[in-house]
Length: 318
Ligand code: BYC
Image 1 (tube, helix red, strand yellow):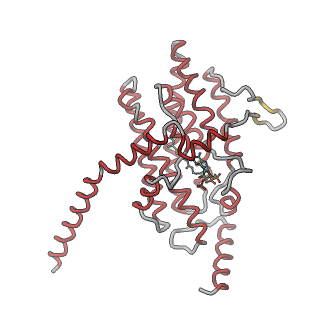
Image 2: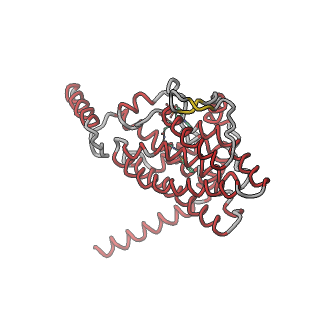
């Protein structure tokens, strides 16, 4: 293709983005657009399936049948979200095996939040309330992202996330209405999950490498800082209803901005976790790689079965 032809394609692509048209897998797209989407969608898919681990840890210890059913359904939803997202990512020309290899070798990232331990039942409440709450705020704008398969996957994901958020908040509410010890468990979980939840939105806009380009391509519809602020403004009143204290002495309503001011995030901790040195990084990877290895015979059996079926079909056709 000549340089001129590429320029024309680029101009037409930019015009389509400006008109808010969806870009579909077979449409022409700049190579950087394709790569950026593979990066973000696959990180998102990896986050969903690694995100099953901290909660999966509590399914057998849920305090009642009702709580067990709800938690089981939530963790299953997360597996489903991973599947929609891996499928959306594959439409960009990368295979599922390559994506798994990137996760297992540590080449691909997944959300920092899942590298923290879940030490009490209240953590199930805090994850649903805060982590899924943050995920909804981050993901609702993605329903309107420019790449069609990602946008469509996000519509269903967001509907399910709102059930997740409510089941978490309900756990917190029950604990806060319970004994002083139960309320203390809820406060302790909030203390441990608050700051990591704020880190989920990524580095500040000034430090974010991808935001500017991703906003131009309408992959991202809001910046990391805008979404973080929206999350804080929405969550503080919910903590007040619970009667819990947000562990930030600098948190203060700003009348002029009609928003909360908040304290400094520990960015050293964030980057340590992102680079693989969080409290649970090694354990999470060990669990994922172990599951992949233990599942090898299932994949082999499914392939052998598919080959046999195909052979039978071919023989019949002769
Ligand atoms: N953790 O330029 P930036 C869920 C990386 S799961 C780790 O701002 P971008 C759930 C970033 O990748 C929901 N890494 O990046 C599941 C980049 O590194 P690379 C997960 C992070 O992409 C189970 C570098 O830092 N949600 O809901 O423009 C149970 C610079 O950052 C993080 C998604 O995946 C982080 N927190 O913006 C419960 C949503 N933040 O790639 C719940 C989709 C940044 O250059 N993703 N990095 O090596 C996004 O919206 C965006 O990718 C982000 C980051 C806002 C996360």
